[in-house]
Amino acid sequence: MTVPSSTPQFGARPGVVTRFAPSPNGMLHLGHAYSAIVAHDLAVQSGGRFLLRVEDIDGARSRPELVDEFRADLGWLGLAWKEVAPQSARLASYDAAADRLRAMGLLYPCTCTRAQLSAAEQHKGPMGSIYPGTCRRSPPGYASGAGVQWRLDTGEALARTGPLLWEDAIAGVQQARPDLLGDVVLMRKDAPASYHLAVTLDDATDGVTLVTRGRDLFAAMHVHRLLQALLELPVPRWHHHPLLVDECGDKLAKRRGSPALADRREAGEDGASLAEALRRHAFPAGISLQSS
Ligand code: GLU
Ligand code: ZN
Image: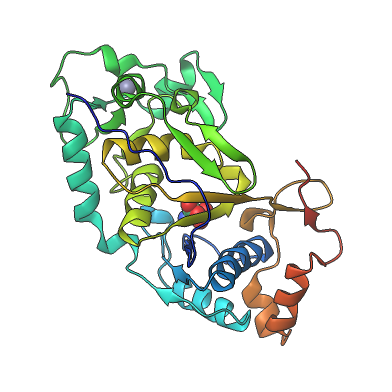
């Protein structure tokens, strides 16, 4: 079976569609505000549209009550958006895509536990350890049902699509190197779908033409571009912006206690002024944009 490889049409496109896609597993902080503003402004400046999509399929970590806080935060910053369906309303599309990849012979079941994987010799990739491929060599049908996760046979998939390109607005045209991430999980055992599969499908469904996000997720695009080719999805452009970091150069993170936007909002700070300051890169003391 050959997979048609679509060639992205590089170049300016008026009216870009961007999105902000927060996961409700913690409050939004300044890094999220910056990311949302980048996405919002790129859409508005081009006469396009800015979408909000809630990425709420992270099972136990998902706290639906935070979504109202997110909306309040974005409104407080002075942004306007159109909200699209949350990921929890899209599970059928994830299943259908997984079925399609399975029928193409590109997904295989994996029963490895976290403990087994950390005991195994694993190479590090740009987004964590690379799966050593243990279950890829198991006979077909050796596992199914609950407790099984499904991995993409990345080498085989790339062999079928042939070389793929993608374009980042800042970093330029890139050759997709999904081999750097290895056989990623697409269907998790503890959640309906992986980040990679869900976000790739959702961006296509929502007509997103410029995917904006922090540079920490840059390498994920190698896999997303491969999925787009396999599933014959339109290919957007990407804009990976630098992250906001603290004095130690660490990225702002909820778990490190960066002040939540909601706290600033409730303390009476003016959100529109904060947004203006972030646009001018006039960051609060100790915070800066990561240089590389
Ligand atoms: N839901 C992801 C997060 O909160 C963002 C995903 C993306 O922008 O692709 O980190
Ligand atoms: Zn395995």
